Amino acid sequence: YNTVQLMAVQEHAYYGSFGYHVTSPFAVSSRCGDPESLKYLVDKAHGMGLRVLLDVIHSHASCNVEDGIAGFDFGQPTADSYFGEGDAGYHWLWDSRLYNYENWEVQRYLLSNLTYWVEEYGFDGFRFDGITSMLYNHHGLQMEFSGDYQQYFGLDTNVSAVNYLMLANDLLHEAYPGIEVIAEDVSGMPTLCRPVKEGGIGFDSRLAMAIPDVWTRLLKQSREDGLRDEDWSMHEIIATLCNRRYSEKCVAYAESHDQSIVGSKTNAFWLMDAEMYDGMSTFEPASGVVERGMALHKMIRLITMAIGGEGYLNFMGNEFGHPEWVDFPREGNEWSHDHCRRQWNLADTEYLRYSLLNNFDKQMMRLDEMHKFLAHPHQFVSSACDTRKIIVAERGPLLFVFNFHPTETYTDLEVGVGMGGKYRICLDTDAFDFGGLGRVMHDAEHFTSPGGPVTWVGPYEQEPRPCAMKVTSPARSAQVYFKVPELEDPMAAAARMAGVSGFKEVRVSARDESGEHRQFASQGGPPAPGSQGGQAQGQQVPNQRRREVIDPADIDPDFSPGRPDNFGVQSRAPPPQARPAAPSQSSAPLPPSNYRPVVRKEIVDDSNIDPDFR
Image (cartoon, rainbow, N blue to C red):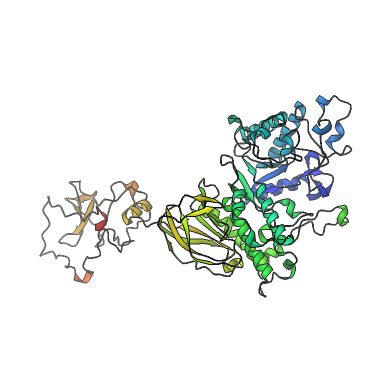
């Protein structure tokens, strides 16, 4: 991970509101420390190379009049109020007040709040909470958005709130280049994440909020309604993961923070429930429930990250399947702090299966570090078969193969591939290190053949991919393949590593009759510096063949003259003991002044390359 998002930082009176009923937007919540402690936390994260985003609440505020900003709205005209009147100023589902964005003082108040958090505490960006309530006069209540543009651009649009969001994004991006601003919107408002100069609202990305909903529904139906794994719809999963405008970036996540607080369950808890308390020790074989839960937990996270968006979000603790929710002190739990925390020791205990889930999450992050697939524009789902429960997708340079079937393992499964070549596995959810069964050979090489198989995504036939490849796909597992780079021409590789365009031999050497080293310039060039008539004076040089490049700037920095240089020596050369001895002083006269030795053979085509040269 490269970013941390902090929630519930702005001061709020009621702990059970999870930080959303803000009473003072400029104040740091006193429950977690003082302002200097927050600055230290942000600086510490920056020192670790992490960016820090603040969950900012500008969509509504607490109704409290004694300790909140809502208490200032008395005795003045509506146009001068911080909050609207009637439905325009009250959110009945949240029981909170809504800002009057037409008021210039409200705009100045909220804009200065954003700059305050950046300049005073050093935050690197924001996540704007609940902006669906801002974008529409109906606040998104009891609305189902179908994608019809009339729902977005009509009389229900809150133009003053849209103008404020455009002002906020324009201010932040102009004043603080590189800042990251993310929107939480369930409606799918078009142009939400396009620059203001293009007429967009200006956010950098939006949360893909439909993704955790589909996983929660499937897991809940499996637990409570008897939905079988065999009945999961691969087409529905793909349709949800890919349902976005690709000109606007999305941040995908497999489960929301709402699932991790009281009132709902995390994905791990839906999958394994009570068996998470006594069935996670590696000293005992995993039960069927735990084995299924761990397998699906890894697959759900991997496919969400692979094709769900251009970013990936995880709520703390879910990366290792934390067994409980975060329960804030409230009247229902007698104001207890017992469950207001995460048990990090579970991930650090090696004999617990939580550590294996955590190991997988680390490797999933490393996969993106190595191959940068999240930021890659290429994404293609070639197969989503509801019969075999197989999903095959390409993202960036990687090929993902998912098998959601609970029992069927497919050997020699033919999948479509975008590029021909040799492929190997770079991540396997079924690996022993991640609590899997180890049913796939990781050192196997997979070669493509021309022409991909006929595939379907739900009821829609897909155009075959250029190539096909056969793989093994165990039940309830996923494998990621990468294309092995093809071998380079050895001479080109040597030149690339040396940082030059190519090599050329321009100087050779030999011994004269006295046994001293003598240099000759090729191509009619001048003698070496410090020599008379081509003979080095007073310099003993080892009997070795040397090379020299045309420009000293092109010299390989790793080349050491003290070591024998075998560059360009052919493997057919006779061994040292079979070569003629150096001529003696009496038998070998000095060469004539116009002598030019034969320059060593220059490689001009592939047939001249020594096959053993690396």
